[in-house]
Length: 395
Image (cartoon, rainbow, N blue to C red; front, side, top):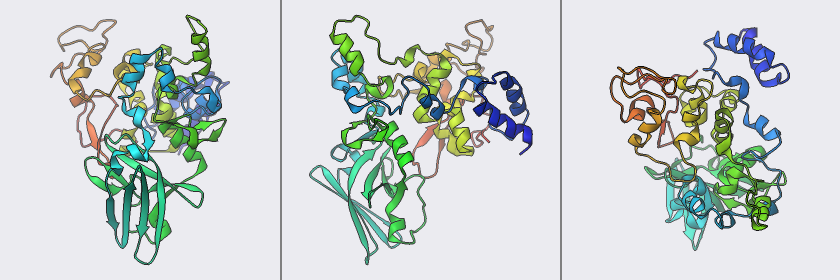
């Protein structure tokens, strides 16, 4: 790597007080095609860890005590319609008890070489067993991660550590090897069990898949609220509720991401869905990045300097189930683009019209890609003119 690129990466991440260097750094970064595409808003974006270090609420913030969380039922006392519809969103079911997991409704059997895997449900519980005939391991499943719409993975404990099971449930497939786990035959029983989740990863996993699972700076799964409920995005609600119950007509004391600028809004979602800096810091390259919608969106040309018309929440209402009908997003596209290629551009519609069609825009400009082991297509959120769907534009 040439030294100007290394210097630029360091400057962009660390020299907060030297913002005058940013314009020079961005110029240098853009001059080197070896780097991933850099958003024009890079000077205003941060890693999720940097956001978490700042004062105020942010997803995965772990400072508040459990007593500061009130639960969705209390939120529904004033926001009944929003609370009820949010429960239909997949985020509200991103984690769940064993008794509710779609993938644990009936016995499971699966073989990897000489190792036999089974999960046996029993009266709201389930036992995970791995055996090679001469050795075996069994443990209760603690929770299921994933709504079940596409699939679910299962967590268990081994020698005091949290593990993710080697096998998962996929709606389109049934049972298969868990994504990001080795696909080869295990070399030992310990190797066969699954993947150990260290403390830092556990904080991030439960922080994104549940609400109030990390409180007082510590993992607190025994008192967590399953799924991402109201307070998973808006922050602990006890102070807000107390003011509202006291008759304050404008209680405040709660985060409202809908009022934030486009860059902050998209980075907010990126706390769990990975910001541009998060992906860059991890060093991920290639097709695997299609999973990170925030990162991909921020590399779209039409993102520009941050446009409120294409933030995450502009297209996806977090209080309602995900809309899967592509034509439903056409009006979102036409809020920036003129309807026809023959029409002149305007100040509020700076995007050229498509010469092919003004309907089902996403089917052409946001193709889907299949990732190995995921068993589910991912929509690429880098909005672009796609020359070849077999190629994936990412370093």
